[in-house]
Image 1 (cartoon, rainbow, N blue to C red):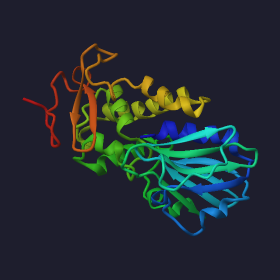
Image 2: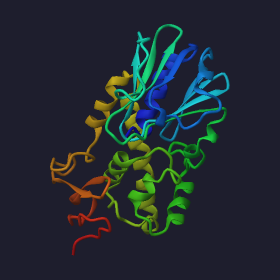
Image 3: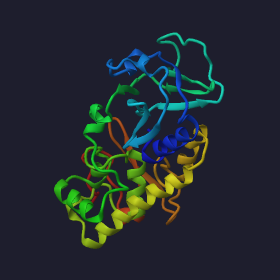
Length: 285
């Protein structure tokens, strides 16, 4: 799933290429992807794009007071074309959910792989009308150490992995970067949020900001088609089960759940003790 660094890079990419251009067409081809109907998506046609921003994992394309808001979900992506096809895409056929054409002939398609269609498109007058945006917690880059401390205290016994991934608590971090942050901080994903010392709090806060900033910096200026491979190449433990930890050389391990998995290094994060591979895992005795 695209997370904060990738969506930030997509926003930057579109700001460079789309701001100042007008929508000529905006065609929904996956009806299930469109979550709003007022204003209609046809209202975008003729509007100049003023800005492109990010809210957590949401992409917000603003055009003269109307916002095209996109959530790419797990399997969605944005595919930019300098010369966009003007062919009408048959609804329900293929991976394309939305096709846009701009006034210089460029444009983008939103595509979604797989059968679980969760990509979402909203056309609203205010981004806060999107339920997912209205529920977002603070952005990691605007969060102070004091506020971060209060969040962890409030979350109590909730595990750090769950706190970092909860969009209503902190916006933009998903499964991949929560694994990376915890590996950098050398902390177990199952450590309770309220069990951190002052030193550990500082370490986790810096690990969060530094990991995300590094990912954003690596992605800056890249073409859209290169962002996925850049993300994968920069990950240290996430998605690398069975590979060597780049810090200590131990084998990266995995804990699987019914709809996701996490990866970690036992030597770096759990004192060398493997985590039990079940939903309510505890350190093996």
